[in-house]
Structures are given as structure tokens and as C-alpha cells.
Length: 319
Length: 173
Image (cartoon, rainbow over all chains, first blue to last red; front, top):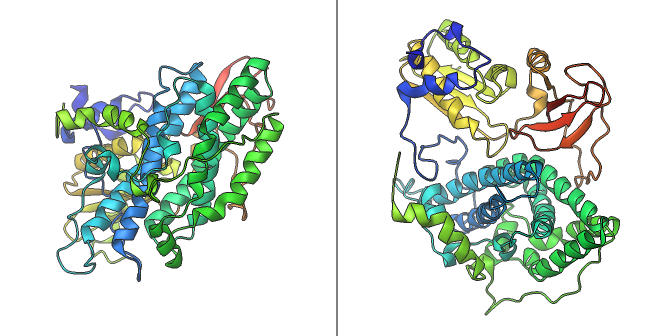
């Protein structure tokens, strides 16, 4: 059978599917969800930098990873719903980039949490949860993402663009500063993420221009979208206790320090798009808690219900 | 280096790895694409291949891993480990000249040169870059971007007003 074709010389370079059929001899069962493969990611097991509390580092990797994971899921809801095929492809690619960033960060969080508070003691490594367990088996209050990532777009394309504009501008500013993080995994994710987010931000900015400076109706809807999500912008610049400690250790960036850059980019785009910067009061914290402390809007529950249902109903399912 | 295997064993394994093609762009080998970071053979014939993903979420990486294991297995290497590393991040600048020629021959416009990352905040690009992307079919330099995001993470969609054909462009990263 051609599926067990063995002569590499005869590989048909024009047949993209041949290589798929050739792998059957060493094929793994396909998981019904998650990755199902033990990814040998060389950097994940890097030692925790000196002077860094592993619990803080694990929490920080969850924050950065959950932002990407949850926002990726919300963006992926546009697949089969976007106004045009090109936009569907663009949004799917954007979601995929964020999912890739999330996978590495969750895997790092799991590895580091496995080291526990007794870092360095023999045999303590490897007890942490893997990326799938972290994505599919945590409850709402264990997620550390900002609220902006979890908001639903309600099939309003302007909402998708407004969120992506703000999210990618902010995340690009964060990751750009994390290129020099003392944690090698965070620095590596930043190295790739900066390139990807540059494309995401340009995409969202160009659509903001097109909609804002388009017809009366597109302008009205783009402005309404910005107004709707603006109360969630303030949270992006609040510094958590973990971040504060990790800034000292050279691992994290203080999100408050990205504010001037984010504001400048947003002001430039909004001005060119003839849109007005919304003046709306920010959603506050409750008892000092927000997304970074596991306190979420009711919208995260909707995301998790869909994202986790298969994994929870059929643990370890393969096909 | 640390490996006790003779250089010839390494170079044979390297040759086998060099034949494996990219699952999404099968006109390119993984070597052409510039994603192979290293091939090591230990004293007992175990092979460790280190590759790097093009994009963080590139789904092809798992197929690459399977293809590498299968191809090396067919060449007699039973113990194969495929590791991935993220840093330094892959750049289209790593695509070989041979790979660029193969892309163009297959109708995919090769990427321009990116060069070193500039320092300071990354500027917004609100209009498609004017850098000329030649039509891989008719050679016209005046082509238009249709969408930054194409059928794979690494390509953009363009069209050529001269020959009226759409084509893919491997976008610079």
C-alpha cells in the first residue's frame, strides 16, 4: 500500500497528503481534544531564575497564558461567522498564534508549579499539571486572564476589531518589554509573539480605520464597540502583587508602564479613524480583586462551558 | 560534539533529515525552510533532531515530528527524539536561496529580507507595505495585497493586475 511506501527518494513533493499517510506506522492515537502528545519542548524545563519564587512565576505564566488562551477562544468563535472568507482566515490565524503562545506558557506554568515552593529538592519536578489539564480542568476562579480577553463579541464584527486592537496593542507592548525577561521561556515566547502581534495589531488598526472612516453606519458601530469595551481597558494597567515582585526579579514587566505607549498607539489610530476616545468609567475591582486574582465576569463561564465540555465529559478521549 | 558517534553517522542522519519536506509547503524541505536547528547521534545510534516552529501555533510542527520519526525510522534509526526550541525565533530570512527559488517555481512569491529587529517601539503599519512583491507567474512588480493572512500561518494572499492571477506570498517575519 502506498500508505507504507518506504522509498524516500520517490517522495512526491506535489502531494501534500502523502506525508500524512506515510506516518501511519508510528502514528499516535488522535486525541479528541487538546494536544495528546508529550511535546518535547526544550525550553519548558529551564531552571527557575535565581531569586524567583516558583509560585509567582507559575502565576505569571498563567496570567500571560490565560490572556492568550481565552482571547484565542473568543476570536475563534468567528470561524464560520465572519463577514468574508478572508477575515475568517485572518481571525483564525490570529487565534492560532495566540493559542500557540498560550500552550508554551501553560506548559511552563505547569512545570514550575510542579517544582513547588521547595525548588531544587530532588524528585519534586514533574508533578505539575500539563497544559491540557490547565486549559481544560481548571474552574473559573483559577483562571488569571483580564476581563477584556473573555468578553463575547455577540457576532458584532466591530466588537471583534475593537477588542483585538486594544488587546494586541497592549500585549505587543508587554511582550516587547519581556524580550529581556530573565525567565528564558517568557523571553522565548516574547521573541515569537512580538512578530505575530505586530501583524495582529496592524490588521485590527486597518479595520478600525476602514470602519471608523467608512460609512455613517460603520462609524457608528465602531464607536459603539469601543464604548462597550472601554470600561475594561483600565484593568490592563493594574499591577498584581505577583507582577510587582517579579518586576523586581527581572522576570516580569509592570503593565502600568505600558500605558503611555498603548495610549499613543490608540490615539493615533482613533484620530485617523475619526473616532472618539470613549470617556467611560472603568469597571473596578471587588475587594481589590479582578481577573488577575481569579475574579471574572460571568462571560468567562460561557467560554469555559464550551471550551471544556468535551474534556470534562470524556476524560482522555481519543479517536 | 559531546556525541561519541563518528562524524559520518551524524552526517548520514543529517542527510536523511534533509529529505523531509514541510507538510504545508511540500516544495520545501525542512532544511530549505530553515527550521532544523540540529541533528545529533549518540553512541547507540539514537538521533535527536531539534527543530523550531515558524509561528507559535503552527499546527505543522506535530506533523513534522511524525515525518522526521518515520523517515529516520525507514533509514534504520529506531530511537528518534524530536525536540522543539523557540529561541532564537524563526525568521523568513532563514529560508535558503534554493528554498526561495523553489517557492517561486511553485507559484509562491518568496519573502523579502527582514534584517535585524529595530530597537524601540514597533511602529504601526496602517497601509500595506509598498515593497514590491513580484508576481511569481508573470514577473510583474505591481501586485496588490488581498489579505495579510492566507491559507497557512506563513502566507499572505495577493493578486496580480497584469496577469489577473491570485497568488500566495510567504510573508516576512
